[in-house]
Image 1: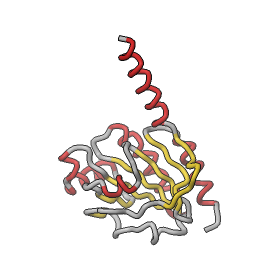
Image 2 (image 1 turned 120 degrees about the vertical axis):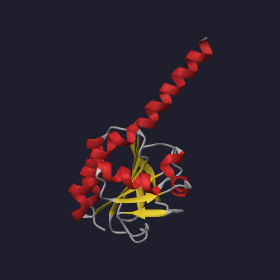
Image 3 (image 1 turned 90 degrees about the horizontal axis):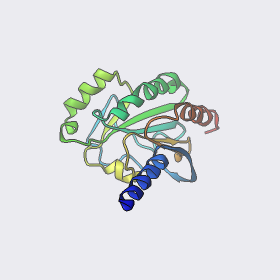
Image 4 (image 1 turned 135 degrees about the vertical axis):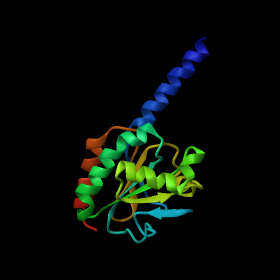
Length: 172
């Protein structure tokens, strides 16, 4: 019984760590978008092409309730800051087989009124390039193309938005 309780406590500690947002201590270049089968609301994008912009890479899938709960904030940031240099890229990485269908992704984008670029990552290539393990996951990338902030799960919306504003104010 004691080992089961220890496992529960360890899992709770891990979740607390996972759900926290954090500036990245060692800034690394953001990986390129890899293995994207379909781009929606956009022509194909690359990190190289997005240099000089602030980029929010948002890993999501349309049947994830936590992802759905973050969408109003992600959409708001896109609407509020797109003309100031923010580019939002939703990387749709499916958890279930029905989430692999482009038609289903399009229907979800219509239902949620998503107007920013969505990269369909059915083979988990971009997911793997980012060493990502969570839905939702937000990666903020500065104008130099470096990952400077990450957040896994819901919450920290004010902190994320404040970081977006700070990054937008930095010189290119």
